Image 1 (cartoon, helix red, strand yellow):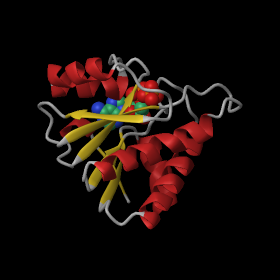
Image 2 (spheres, rainbow, N blue to C red):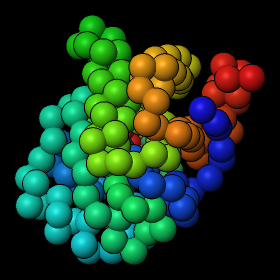
Image 3 (tube, rainbow, N blue to C red):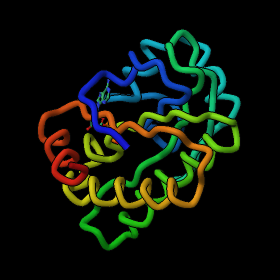
Image 4 (tube, helix red, strand yellow):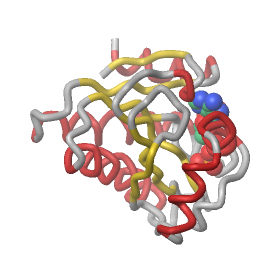
Length: 164
Ligand code: ADP
């Protein structure tokens, strides 16, 4: 596992993960950036898929992006913690990696799911992300590298504190 500060749309990895919404209709934040940079082909496949439940993941082409595929997962909206937000966020990470495994994708980059517009506390989200990915990698040898792509300094510091 590694931490980097970058724009996820620029990364040449097998799969980048999108923090999508249930309608898979695009939006702000990292979702908007991925659709803008990847072009219309991603949205066409999203439309055909139709939607995605919170905590689950679907896969599409990466269009014009340098990665091979985009895995779209829907993070929970933070509602105080009593709505299974923590389990659902963990499911986003594990289901995204399961989707990568099933599609023979070995290098995966995650954004800090739910910590933008969806308001999940960043420190808790970092704990869940690292714990869930760590467990998955221990149990599955096929994934070679996972990058946590931090867009802001606060998230980068939280991940570095936990991983180094
Ligand atoms: P959510 O709705 O799941 O909270 P957001 O897109 O609002 O999704 O935020 C998720 C995280 O993605 C935030 O930490 C935000 O800073 C980050 N982010 C926004 N744009 C990019 C980008 N181009 N590359 C990587 N991370 C990004």
